[in-house]
Amino acid sequence: MQSDVQTTQEYVCQIHAQRHIELRAIEPGYLEEVTVQEGQSVQAGQLMFEIMPVIYKARLHADQAELQHADITLRNTKKLFEKNVVSDQELALAEAERARAKAKVALASAELKFTEIRAPFSGIMDRQYEQQGSLLEEGAVLTTISDNTVMWVYFNVPEADYLDFRMRPGAVDPQQPQRLTLPGADIQLRLANAEIFDHRAGDTLTIESEFDNETGNIQFRADFPNPEGLLRHGQTGTLLLHETLADAIVIPQRAVFEILDKHYVYVLDEAGIVHQRAIQIAYEKDDIFVVERGLTVDDTILLDGVRQVHDGVQVEAEIRPAEEVLAHLKHHAE
Image (tube, rainbow, N blue to C red):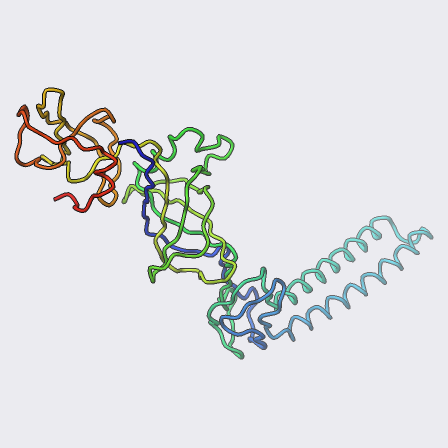
């Protein structure tokens, strides 16, 4: 019979935070202050680490003094220039000297700010890799921060599935070819403890740009909201992609037999003679097969006794409605 069938495709997935970065020390020095704890939530701009700033403060004060000296020199040169005592070249040199001193102050101020390491966004702090009092080298990793408000769930899709998705009418917007929309799809996440995550992704997926030459797969990404913070960066799970096949041809599994990895059924004609017919299975679910090619709703197939007949044999059969049979299936295919 024809029926709407919900299909489920499962993909092993990796769960990443939408933003996950390392915090590093830009300047070398002693780690003087640690104002946070491992695993705590931090707010954007919050001070997390402070590297001993004494040297940088002294450098800033020295450069500020040079700037003051350059300001005084420039003012005096301007007065002398107005009285035609010095040339315009000397005035230009004084202005250049003042600009150089101002640039040095700006650089020293920036270096001093680099001794304060602040959270670039709100998130959760991970492990603390350096302890208070440690001598840090330039580029030393202090910790990582994860923004877990939205989780990016990556899963590998075989090339055949990728082509099936992409070739659906309206699935891809030419203006955003990396986005794939599956109208009506229900995307869920099964966690490592077999529980289903409370929140669902939308019906739009993101496609990576390249296939993996070794596996023949391409990565897709689904975005899941994570308001309770249950998901963390680095978790694994299984992505469940539920879709509905409308008006699919459905038959019982036990009516099907295999020969050399191909599927067949016996079709009964009006004279009561059975004919072996090859079919193509689109999907398997519980006790049924969804047939992609080979049968129509007008065909009558042999349900029981498929191993007792052969092609061209006339049989005496009881005809039963497909709805009745499919409603009372108990046995899987052998």
